[in-house]
Amino acid sequence: MSAPADATYDLFIGGEESPGAAGERRPVIDPATNREFARAAVGSVDDARAAMESAERAFRETNWAEDDGARRGRTLFRLAALLEADAETFARIETLNMGKPLRESRADVGYVVRTLEYFAGLADKTEGETIPVPGPRFDYTVREPLGVTVHIAPWNYPLLLAVRSVAPALAAGNAVVLKPASLTPATAVAFARLATSAGVPPGILNVVSGPGARVGEALVEDPRCRSVTFTGSVEVGERIAALAARHLRPLTLELGGKGPVLVFPDADLDRAARAIGYGIFQNAGQMCWAASRLYVHESIREPFLERVRAVAEALRLGPGLADGVEMGPLVSPEQLDRALGFVADARSDGGKVLTGGVRATDAGLASGNFLRPTVLVDVPEHSRAVAEEIFGPVLAAAGFRDADEAVRLANSTRYGLLGAVWTRDLSTAHTVARRLDSGMVVVNEAPITYPQSPFAGTKSSGLGFEQGRDAVRTYTRRKNVLVNLGAPKRKA
Ligand code: NDP
Image (cartoon, rainbow, N blue to C red; front, side, top):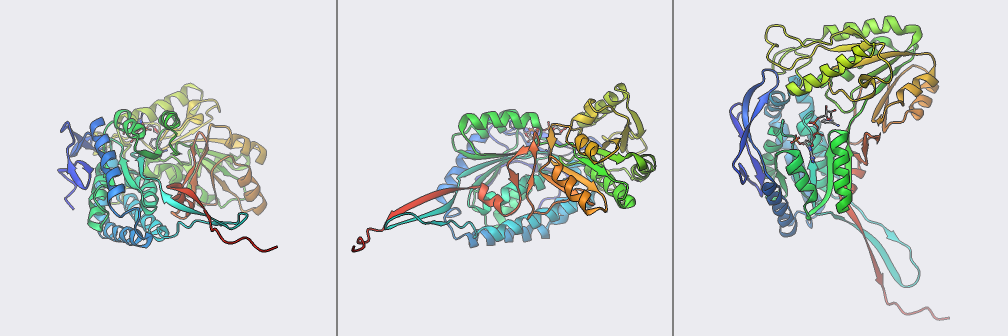
């Protein structure tokens, strides 16, 4: 694969790279310096249509959909192996483009490899059912691929969140059109190149970058679109849901979060403090499932917050490619301003900054989008900083008196993605886990997931689910076939 620096990431349509109909390219920026490190094509509505056309033709004319699922699976296993062999290059591109520390990008690429392997293994397991019906009849269902599936990905885990839905769609036999975020198109294009080398037929995986409001909407509205999977903000998710409803498209939405962490006094407080740091400062807090609200039992509130403050202040900030860096920059100056705006709101609502809350401007950091790991306390419940997703390294902490109050506070936002409970008491762990209004709960654990575990949100956090064995079924339709066997009637 080409070296990341000075590279060009074009559109990938029908197995070929091109700058698109208008030939427009834009700089791809390293958020640690805000300098250009590559260029990427800016697709248009015409390019979106060309990608849909290419996918639809490949779905019809290649044997990808009709082939034995085991063969598709072998192709996806090959793709996983190629990615694993080139993992370091992919990780470096991801870090250059998104800013996260290299060890996080390496973990992300490892996760993508495991995701591909998991869904490769499911490619020949889309079984149907036989159904008893009266008379000499045979009734059965088959699972068929949908056709062309559209995937709109965000910038916070550019490759991981794209492949999380692309892999099951491919495993099920669909043809895919992927739109990466405009800020982070690089690894999606590099991945499509690799897919071709692995034997994915031209046109089965297309990548079309370009402004979401034009290219993304054109993909959703295209008559060839058979399903939409979107990861990103609630606002855009709602907009896409309206478009999908108008055209009756099946839809999977993975939107924002405002993850509550409940720490009871009997918890392993050292582990909890470290996990809370990981849950909000990993990827500079730019995670849908960030553990961004901390609720601590009043009896341990002050000493525990001191531990969390120590974790925050010990983190080493820097460009993701530098040795030993534990937190990188935010993805863009806009994202930095947005996070600082939330901190300002928290202050004006009466909250205090326990640590952080300002840009990091030390030598080597001043030109990047670095925000010091931030812990806010005494922020009123109604403040935007407590109620809304910040998508930055900003934790809002408060106390609770008993489990009822903890659960009430945890469930008080419009989100419902991931909640965390820290306690050594089995009964508290399980009863609180059940009462949390969220799609996922972790007990005595930082935010963690695996390709085999469903990833889902409730309320404004999403619709449907990703990952897990049922994810492949999301990208199939169930057809019922009823056969009259014409057998002679039984004699009386
Ligand atoms: P968006 O929701 O705008 O972007 C996510 C993806 O959707 C991108 O590929 C984007 O394209 C595309 N898109 C944007 N508008 C449309 C549209 N009208 N139709 C179809 N696709 C569209 O997120 P932002 O980048 O603006 O981030 C803002 C906030 O969203 C963050 O601060 C965070 O709170 C939340 N977010 C949540 C994520 C999650 O993992 N759940 C991921 C990213 C953001 P383009 O890049 O060209 O705009």
